[in-house]
Amino acid sequence: MSGSGLPSSSERQHQLSAKNKHHSSTIYVHQPGAGEEQLEVGQVPGLQPHSVVWPLRTMHITQLNRECLLHLFSFLDKDSRKNLARTCPQLQDVFEDPALWPLLHFHSLTELKKDNFLLSPALRSLSICWHSSRVQVCSIEDWLKSALQRNICSRHESLVNDFLLQVCDRCPNLASVTLSGCGHVTDDCLARLLRCCPRLRALHLENCARVTNRTLTAVAAHGRALQTLHVDFCRNVSAAGLRRLRAACPRLTLRAEHSAAMIPDQLPRGPHAPGAALRKLLLR
Image (tube, rainbow, N blue to C red; front, side):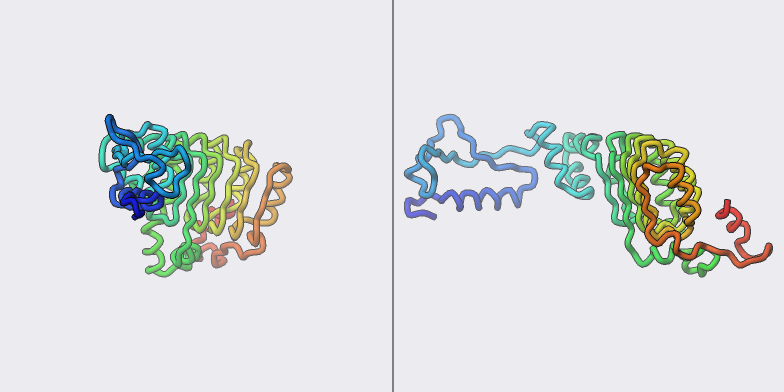
């Protein structure tokens, strides 16, 4: 507080910030009211000449126009957007605006089941990066898993595939997809993604144990717009498959860090060995 009894500009700014912090749907602005007295510069130390300070006025967040609301929502994470949207129909309408959802990033598979995002043709970039101890369980060869490990995998085995099928139906303009640690994503699902999203330019796959040379074949057949393909630590991608893809798509930026050097899935030999039918499927 200054000697004149009026708050300084820094104090006024602090008060403004404190009020906004505790009132998430109310915005405090300097706005003159009819007949209100202006505070001249000489009364408020530290302000530049010819400056005028108006008393604080309030406005509700819903008084902002659509563009401002979309901009504000863009700074929030998915849960915060959903919580704010629940406060009134107008904000729910902003939440459901496709323009708010050009980018989606998920840190775990359980996030795919939440109702806190929107899939629409506006989606351009999708990322699912799962870094968990369960990723290692999913990466174990199916015929080597214990009953406990199979039970763990059964809880989320179809999550990524089912989610990507929704993406195929609703997001034809997708340009970039990153999947990391998604051990259950299949060749068939990725082939459909390539067919349904003809504008896909970048596909980054890392530690996706079920991805095989069939995905490389699908890239050559359907990835007409694809410019970058990463298949890092995908142990069932072979050096021969990579060579064929390079020959078919010489302009494609292809990276397969450690993939061809890793030991691929191999079932025990013999026609009656457990999982022999699955082995035949992987070798197709």
